[in-house]
Length: 283
Image (cartoon, rainbow, N blue to C red):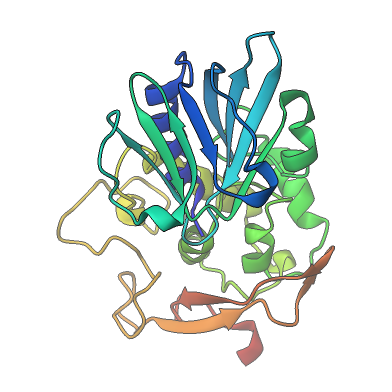
């Protein structure tokens, strides 16, 4: 599933290519919107909201619609010159938008729908403050996370109703930087404001380039980009030495059996240092 930084980059690319452009044609390859044609509509802007993409359009009669998409695990938007050859199989295309300046194609989109722009709140209004958005409110995010102090911190960080934009990579990396095991309860976080600040800093540091979380040191200070360091502190580094203490990184699973508000969370891999981040189950 994409993280907030990759969605931000996708939105920026789409906005640069399409904003101000009139659609020559639109092709929605999902049953619900297969007959919808937005030819002649103008793309006004493309904005990210957490892990969601909102493409806003205005019609010839000043109507306003939003194309809402979510990449989920496999989705991607790609921009091509007019008539350019696609880099992904055509059968995976779910939305094709053509203007005089560019073609935008959404492949394997997990969610694709069109709503009135005035009704956007019905699809993204449940989200918490966006770490990369103008609505970021650290106090509100902290309040939401603390509403369920018994929930594992790694589960709370993935709950987009608490704060929007964190995916599995960043939850593992932020927990490592804060020396807390992802399975430890929210109540065990020694400094939740600092943890949230680290998350925001990490996402902001990566919106303009390939993701590398080791730009932040374990002391919470910028470490700079170095070709000699792995890109991640713990994520995907099972059995490799911890960059802080040298202990082999471990992989576990978190999610199954924990309830968060409206249902069980999806089971996901976690990566952690057993020395720097004590497993609460071992206590």
